[in-house]
Length: 381
Image 1 (cartoon, helix red, strand yellow):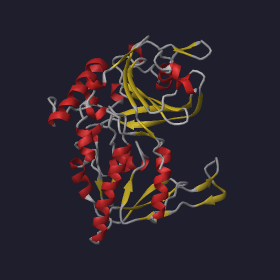
Image 2: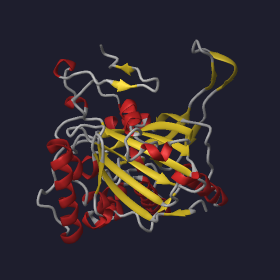
Image 3: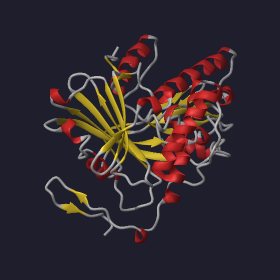
Image 4: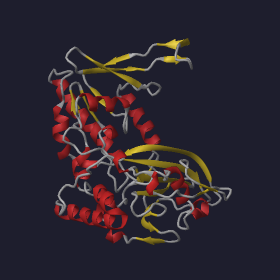
């Protein structure tokens, strides 16, 4: 298995423009602790799990994307179709054209990640977001570095919030020290920020120049990089999971624990829950109906427990800003952990991220420094 590096040190930092403050671990809610966890590449985990799945007879098609939902005469989902291959630049079939395949099943589980195209169609078609809070999102940027041995601390997990983001803009970061002098660094910006001059990629680059961060990468080499969307609505924004013919799982459902910046554990658990319920349905001779058991039971599982304890962190942060919002969010996690309740009840998000953005006239451009020392201003001016 790929789990080689156990967490040996857990640090939480609040960053200011020129310095940092380490928050005592004893003040952090127990659910924020990473001790007992492993730092590992999710890509390696997926490849490892794939070998075991294939050994059990599971067919995996990593080179194909599902681009279309298939329905029966009653409107239930019965499968998906893959995209056509060999399409030329002009949109016409080329000499290597191959028609997409129809893949049919007794049930269809959609786990295509955040804002997946098929999941969005299903949510709209079956009104799965009805009576739920608006889904909230973040953008996460990540890089993998090979650093100098003297800058590497295998097993160190470091989370931070604060600078370069303002006190009214949510977000945070992580540094995970893996094996072989490798460090994964990530930066998340909540997409309900107000200033249209803010660019998450540029904020990430500024973050790496902070005195508490930059020494790690001095003399190192960036190996890879990428970005992805993150669901942040949590417990109150999870859509109805089941629909005629299948269910949503993983980040298509929005199971990310926002303060921990982790969702893989709940994605796996949601797949296990769906597999159990679907297997029971098929054993009873059912097919292509709505597996309501998945929707009716997830809140009573570890997924529901995990998300319910942190359900108010995001709305408190959004409404009150970083300083007060994070402090009250931490207190709320403590009361949920110790007593199973919250003095706030279950707070609402209220509006979409897009509705939070303000006109450019209300804000000043941000001067982002470039590697050559030249300042570059926003792309709107």
